[in-house]
Image (cartoon, rainbow, N blue to C red):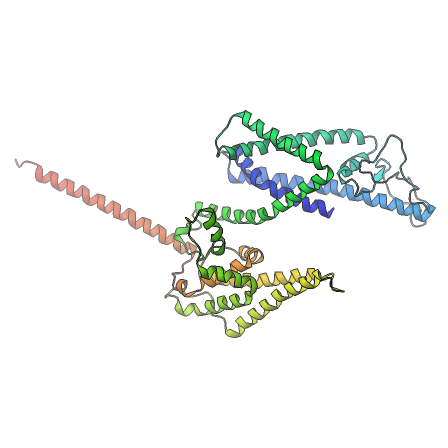
Length: 466
């Protein structure tokens, strides 16, 4: 069950890019609230209820089959005593199935009300790792008298699901191939047939092993998209705030001197743009590797740089709190060193299979989360000092996922060349923009009024005297 849980996670995440394009295409003309509720919230609630209902029924069936096997071994010294041997029933998953008895000849269950069961839910099957694709049909087959009918309905709905999914996927691929323009329906049919042929060839060539390989590929593809989707959610939220004028645009507000996607990542952009974007500063690349191998050093630089900022700030832009002392900063750096070192050392002990180190990996990741919390708290303080838009969750996820770049960003922000930058809040920046626009409108109105007065004066001078 744990493997299928991970597979479903990777499956949904890997589908997210083209499903988002498909939802945007079919939701044209609707509000964001309608899309969020009808296209995202309602399907999520339905899927949650579906998995709770059928997942709970499957777990119950497996536990009851295991229970009957144990009772047969305890009462009759035969684990297969309650084995279902009907000639017209074959378990789809190749696991053993057991007929549910009306009563049990066991002292713990002989009393009335102790053994409660439903004879119409029989036979119950135990899951088998030999054929996990048959679990669903085992579950449907336990409903007495309705098993074959439910299996047929399941096959029909599964085919419809894949047909509609292939149609929406082909639509998105067609849009990408045509740069967003509407293409002929024949081209979409071509993409649908191509997708189907690729799947058939892979399954025919490798069978069950190829299916597991495809599942592994979907998980690997879903991992990077998890980070990208989190960034997209934050970007969408900020775009909506800018659209409603709850937040100034990027060129009108104080922002990070080094974005999380900048610095060392600009090297990739430099290569992809054939040198048009320019190389990053050497200090940002150096700080990235220092953050990877010696994060306490960069944390100390960021803390001491932040402590030195209030005395350098212009009047009216002082920090929200008093600067930290050397002792306080030293305590943070020591805690950072201990947690980061524990994360590395405990993982090494786990990999070396040291005796008694089986649970060290959990302690290691707990130490890493503590390290990320320390880095996020310092980033939050720097962001609050410079009145940079963001949230605590953004700070935490930045520290968890790309802590070297986060530490480099913090050091660049508190460096000398950025410390004298004017710091204003988002609301103050919006007011400044509105005031500038009002002044501009006033000047335009004044110039227009002066032009009108000049025109009247010229007309009066040009009029003949009677």
